[in-house]
Image (cartoon, rainbow, N blue to C red; front, side):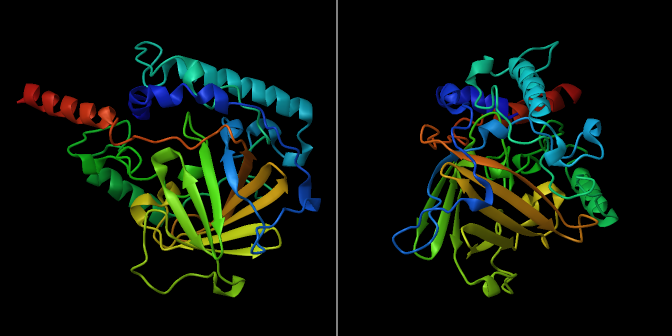
Length: 336
């Protein structure tokens, strides 16, 4: 679906080669001390990309059963990166179509996630199994009700698409939510972090959202009691733990909550600088209405001044949704 948007925005996507670079930073672990802003906060400002994290699976693959991330050797990481790059290359040739009906969005070199240099073997951080926990029966019932409301469709690939409201917020160019806008994709993998006294703003290229995060004391970072403060990206408040920016977000609109989560979802993100050009980012999910236990995952953000945040003309180029609705109406006419 988004491949049609990518095709309509080809001028933007051809910049992808500039973005798909190996990390240029030197991660230094916990000993690194970030510079500070004139008002005294750790300075994380700059343009970052997650393009090199593309292809990393969420959960630990079966071939590494019983291993921790640190048990995976550099040679194995290199092999995994090569295999993932080959899969991405193959996908890019047919994205938006199939091998039998190749209506793909364009040549593979358009895509920013081409030839990534991964930082880890998988993303889930929770030992000992490093798997996404099972969903609750309540979450399964919610998902079934949503599918029924959409006439059995998934809001992305499968119809019936009786109206635009049956598409996901992402397809409708509204939001990818949190952490959707943080996740690697075929393009739009840049972020801009800007700071001011009392605030941090994160601007995403994908869907072109901006999260304005007020900074509060750690004791004030819990859930807000105001039910009116709801949005697709929730209500966020941040605080500093040393050089690490901690962002606690509640009050998500259920329609945009990650992984089919409920409106009770609470997320805790950590932006930990590990070198002059790297941030180790992680997120923890807490929602007893959706998962059987809290869980977390993470990835690396790499500072790259060349990865500018370009205009994301999604609404202007969203021919995919228009065409899918038109085809659905034409199909209805032939069935009458």
